[in-house]
Structure formats: structure tokens, C-alpha cells
Figure 1 (cartoon, rainbow, N blue to C red):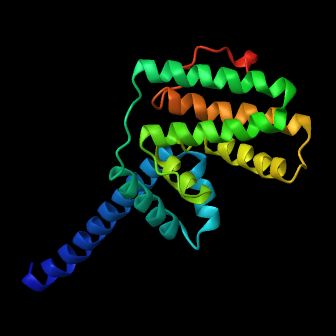
Figure 2 (figure 1 turned 120 degrees about the vertical axis):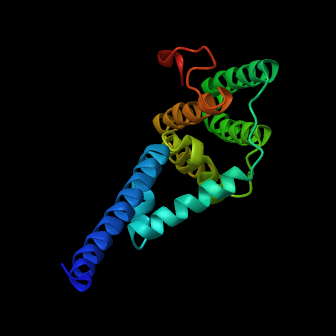
Amino acid sequence: MSTGTLIAIIVPIAVVLILLAVATWYLIRRRRLQERFGPEYDRTVQRSKSRFAADRELRAREQRHDHLDIKPLPETMRDRYAKDWTQVQRQFVDRPGEAVQQADRLVTVLMHERGYPTEGYEQKVRDLSVEHGRTLEHFRAAHAVNEHVRDHDATTEELRGAMVHYRELFDELLGNGHRGSTGGRRGDRR
């Protein structure tokens, strides 16, 4: 076989192998993003021009997150925040709108304590999405109701739902990324 024939056979095979390797690498990377961000991955894809743009944004969020000083809370601080949450829940009975606003403030303070920047809602969502993508919809839903509270336009059922939503993210933040840290049973939450 001549050298020209060998090159004509080997080069296309090498190109196909390289393309397969790149495609495999890209799919593995995309799957890792999907697993890490959960439902936030699909939401970002829907809001982006393309999957490539969504992947690029999510990787940028990861890079920003890597530069944050996110730290776990010591047990004493977790206990204090759990007590603060209990107070907020008690307030719900007499002043549900104020309790929802207080829940929002408590989540924000807890985020700050853990090392998350708290400058603006959209940035909070982007920063939280890296480690808390699965509970982010709870935060969005609670925030939407909290906006209605400011306009005095939220029903008691919406307020109750907001408290449940805030509690989901609160629990995850309080548990240093692990669920079920406050010791409360799910059925006891407001």
C-alpha cells in the first residue's frame, strides 16, 4: 500500500476519533452541569439563546462561586438560626405578611453568614444555583409572594406557601447544603 493510500485511510479515521472524543467530552461536561444544577439547568437553557450559551453561563456561575468564601456554620450558630426560624413561624399566626418578610430577611442574613453575596435578587439566585439548584424554585416562589406582600396583595394561602418555600432553602442553607438539619418534621412547617 502506498503512503498516499495510508494517509487517505488514517487521516479520516483520526478525524472521526477526535470528533468522537470531543463530543464525548462535551456530553460528559453537559451531564455534570445538569446533575449539579438540577432544574436550574433546564431553566437556564430555556432562557438562553442556545445550550452552548446556557452551559457557558452555568460554568461562569461555577467560577464565580469557586471564588466565594462559602463556609459551614458551627453548631451554635445553626442552633441560633433554628431558634430564629421558630420565632418567625410563630409570628405567622398573628402577622403572616410580616412573617414572610422576616423569613426573607432571615434567609438573606443566613446566606450572608455562610459567605454568599446578597446584593440583589438575581445575583442571589445565580450564586445559590451552584450548590442549591434543586431548592431554587422554592426561593423564586417565596420571593414572588414576598413581592405581593409589599403590595398588600397576597392571600393567606400564598403566604403560607411562601413560608414553606423559604423553609426549604433555609433548611438547606442551615444544614450546610444537607437537608433536614433543623430537626423539624416536614408536616410541622408553615
